[in-house]
Length: 68
Image (cartoon, rainbow, N blue to C red; front, side):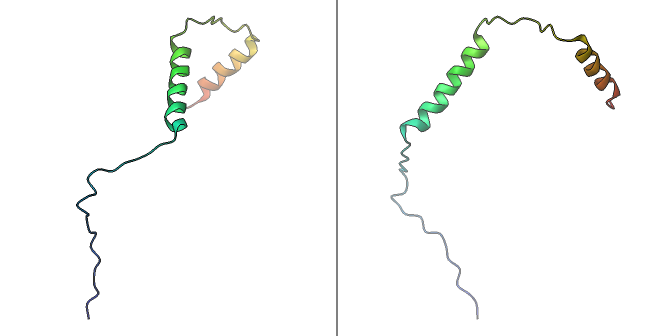
């Protein structure tokens, strides 16, 4: 005895699907994008770090020991 297979029926009125999003689902990504864009495009006051030179030497040593 063979089992019946269920086929997916397509409704003729399914052509126009309406999706409703809450206001924050659109606003939050837009605000985050704007903030990141301002961080990237802003001139900023970047200065070189004047830390302990031993830290720099340690990092160079670690990089040298890593296999290439």
